[in-house]
Length: 606
Image 1: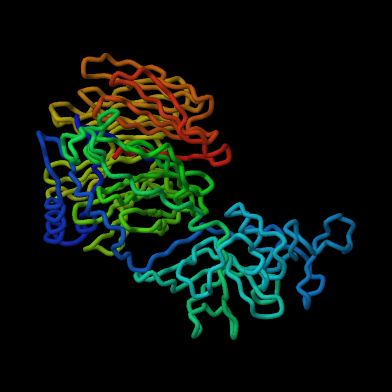
Image 2: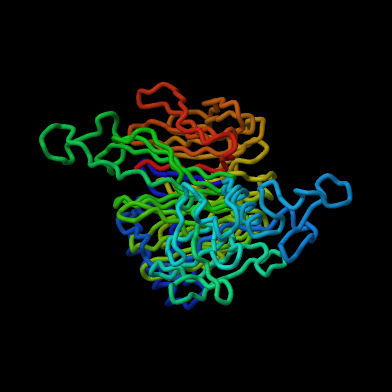
């Protein structure tokens, strides 16, 4: 799960920018160089509280990542690999479909209508499995480009080839097709290598997963001697996504003086400084079918949900950054272990690229962008690893391991304190809460803060103005805890709530001296636990969605309205809000369908 906590009495971005992790493994001088660059990039300490003030206009996804790989988390589970040879010269294999012990007419064709173990049947199977598209009835492979009515057929030398495309060749008596799983582009955007899953590549009915990098004089990839890939059929649209939404309109002149200036205010309710005080709310969701969606509304935008990406592997964790230049970045991890970035806006077309493949399921994720344009993505993995991936104007795309805590890292959060010292708090399946920290006066250290005794499903952290560190955790057995220390407090862990059921997710916020924990449960309820700021410890129910809660995220806007966004297993996303003169209200903001399988959501108000 990815969660985000604002520990200040003002809107503050996530403190997740340990941009000098890697330098701590080098000389002390190199470590201080990296720390100096971080300090200069906008770290400000106020009253013992660290806050990262990001020059968001510096977010620049066009910075070269060197070669960029996009891929589908592919596995070959073609179900008819055991079909028996009938006539190898004619590429006929058969299955005893009626179980009478002998071949009967029609037993050479699969349910897709193509010959068992032929290239067409393999490609049709994978297109249906990974993209949900039926390509039956397209004939021999050499006819697929002509018969792909309604789909974009790209030239063999195109540079917009993507995973999920069908590679098609006209060569030979029947032609040939395969399923593109990996695409590698150079920093100029040219496709330089492909991997294609195929059946019958060598006329033997066998599976191959070929890599192609050689091209002919026409710029087409050579698939064998004298033969090439002539076309690529886009069966699911660009990354399986619709076009990005239009840019947000210019701020309105609400006071009617003919000038857009600080005297203008939002016509409905105050929001953040971006958009002239008029909030645009964004909710990003990841699903088990590998899709990423954005739902947004406000400041002239109607309530809209659109698909931003499709990667073919279940999405497990989502986070986001938005620059004031209009560039949106969604970072997400998958069950297959891949970490991706999807970005658009500010003159950039919708692009999805793989950052790293950690080869183990990603369980939690967070992100930050430094003022020098360096992007940082942090992941917790099922095998216990905590990693950072970063890149930018001064750094090539790099991934390194911060810690291995020996148990699935199902939640993590970070803070930056004066020094600066970096802190990563992790919650694991073995019930442990740990801190990893380092800085110019601290070597990289990981130690245990608490043993909750049951699997931790979510965790947040924050530092209040009195210098007290707070880590909030929720466990699968229905309990929520606070661990705190500093500011004159010894290390203490206290139970804040026992909901008496299975907690599936959590979000936390701190505002005006009050802590809020929002928990989603397996029975479909969302409950708030709050204390401080004049309030005694209390827990109340906000929502009963009638379907198990998959993920919750929350915002408290500057008008003191609390917003809790809830995703449930039936594919629905709801907003519950109250405060600032609003009574408790819940409305549905999106329905991705029961088959979507929402796994994680993340919210941002800009």
